[in-house]
Image 1: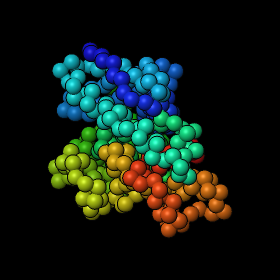
Image 2: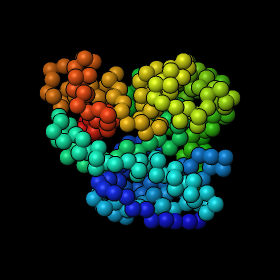
Image 3: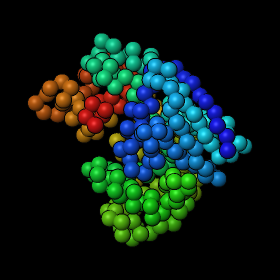
Image 4: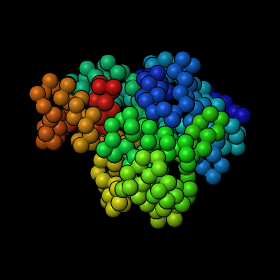
Length: 287
């Protein structure tokens, strides 16, 4: 075992981060202890725990891990997952004087927290397509409970090799549609074979990632934008097709109906190059 105290610049509201993580029943979150356990994917899967010990304005965290030999790798991974290297104060200041300023004040310090695995992020995005949130989580739970594994109370998504070996009927039995089952298995085959190298893709610019992923059956622009934001932590994405974003804008601007894409483009001009944070705070406003 190993542990380390990490201090970062504020604002960073870890309790708000835990609130969002708690929306996914697969996450091992303890809001009272201000702790979340994290699956660390790799050749030898392990778990780590992050506990907030500071405040929004003076954030500090205790990281606990399993293996001292991998401590540096795990710490680096956690920094990335919780976006501790981002200048949240500067991003917040960017929205001063814009229509989103009240949301950034109300939800001050709410950070982006990434999905714990890029592959799991893509799978989850495919599962969630065109489903209401409750059933999307139910279907994802069934998938992970049946084909993933648990370690130290933390659920891991199945590795691509395991999913690639499934039959469509295996997922149909969990109430997947036939197409959705085909999409998840097809993606997993590409990753398992190395034809889709997610580690290499992560280093590419957004445009190249979009070009690569939309060629895959079952992945469209909405899925890619969510992957770029929650899988890779890219800063400037605004998924206009997302119903939640549309509802939040309708509420914010007191519109009679959902905004058109042209109206959304006009609103978003003031928010670049941090459209991903604009999206996050709009989602927060209706959660």
